Length: 437
Image (cartoon, rainbow, N blue to C red; front, side, top):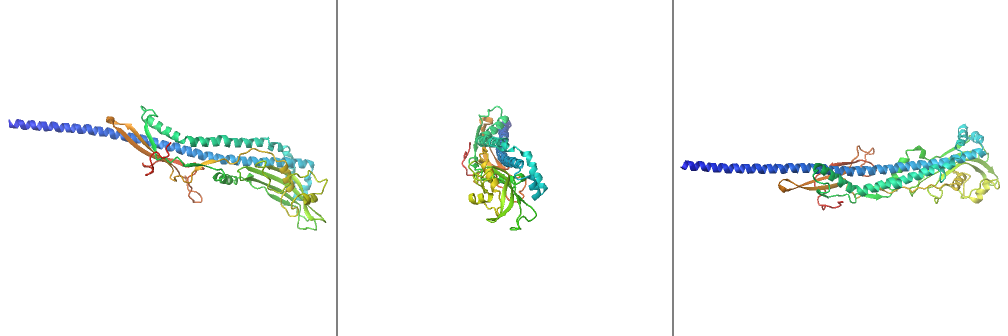
């Protein structure tokens, strides 16, 4: 009887142990389900965070390409302005050649066949002034470039900056929806925190970094270089000044003024050495070619000139008119003041707005990049809520070192922005939600 009771106790104990084991198996299964759900949710949120960082990188790189497009358009406008001044110069030179003032054989005799041939070649530029006039082809092309800057490039910049937070969140939610198709993109319990987008970029005047880059780029084009050259004859002209010679002066330059608008001037004059008993040796200027595209109609010409030059000097000697009406140095000067005066009197009006404002990384921005953190809550096994965290950043990294070895701070003029995950939390001590869209 006692043995039977003992066997029954063992049976009860075994049953209890089996029940406990079953309960443990059930609990382990639930824990396993929860762990699997958590791991899957963490991976999904990491993928979503990385996608958000990629959206940021693409946006910042696009802004970099837009800024570089600004540089390209400015270089194109510099070429157009220079070509406009050249067209005016060439057209006027053709007119002077046709009138024989000065004759081509005089230029050849004093300065050699190359200069003579160059003067004769100006005949092919006859009528080119119309191309550079206020309504000419070159002026319209210049206005079109400026319109692209004002309407297209500037508009793209504003749209990218305005929509970046919402585009980032759409990408994040779309990735989550692909992992959990049963949940609509707008129904995820998702929060964005530790977001330093606010104040990361700033809109700066084009007279800062953009101007510097434009001038550096312009220096690479010889067509935009100063166009200054002086040729002289080889023999003595006048015993009163045996060291002086006839001169053929070519002058020209392309300039970006303080307002960020291009201008170009080109002149060429034959300066015949003369002398008389009143003023001694002096240079009588014969203007051969001239053209000036000013930055604006109100911009004064920086070169020596007068506003109302005479068409010819049949009524008064050149040297006497200069003495009475100007401050020109016709003894040792190096300019083409008469040609400058004609260029000033015939200047066309081109429409241009100057360097635009652009976006760049703010000076006070986090040098580690554009960061944000995500928190996702989803229903899990046994009606429990599963919470996941992730964080990502978009950072600036050159593919190679600068040639000068200097560190390059993050900027929006080189498309070197990349994306990556970072530990959560991204910025300890920063209140959650700060700067969130």
